[in-house]
Image (cartoon, rainbow, N blue to C red; front, side, top):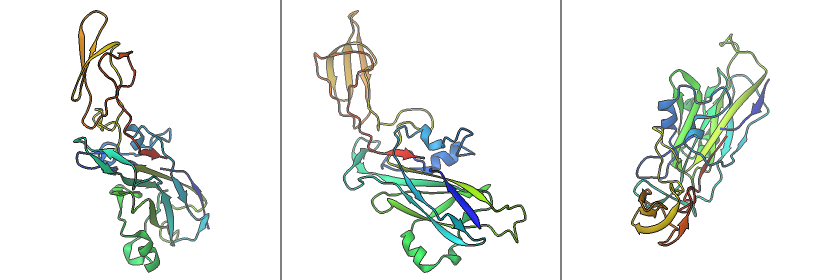
Length: 254
């Protein structure tokens, strides 16, 4: 019998046009999605924390298909986030499962009909050719896939002599919505923006906020599309005071 211990982990970020969770960003930028401290790569772009829930059997037999259930809860039908052009859209979600060596995504031709139905068409894929024990899913509509089902095939010690049976650690992650930082390091518009200088608001023109400083000079600060500016002309602000609302309603769970 193989005992199971569980930790949690998905990643995501976003590109213009939708509020999505993109494992592809982590796949392109990180050979190993989990660093030695246990941090998952998606946490570098998704700065907000949101819990996930994972369920696994405590014991499984060799060469057996079983399921892991990953819940990524959110009010998907009510919560909206800005896309790159500033308009609002519902959140997508994504997930990652980091399994021990030898454990992998169950092959389609061995999936029981009941398990196929429970998956609701969700497609999982290997993180890379070199790491078939790590799989990702998404971006997919959050309202439909708030609960994700992952079919796992346990290893067969008769064909894999390097497999030792005992307690194993699985790591899962889940994300909903867009990140706050792109892989290149630049901010997305799914952020709250803060005053970069101290002074008096002298003008608000579209996405530009002008701050009259004490020395008489004017500092112009531009926020990104979709930002809801909350300061008015004549208002005093200090450096790092919020000048917009916080549009982020998503987050990453590990």
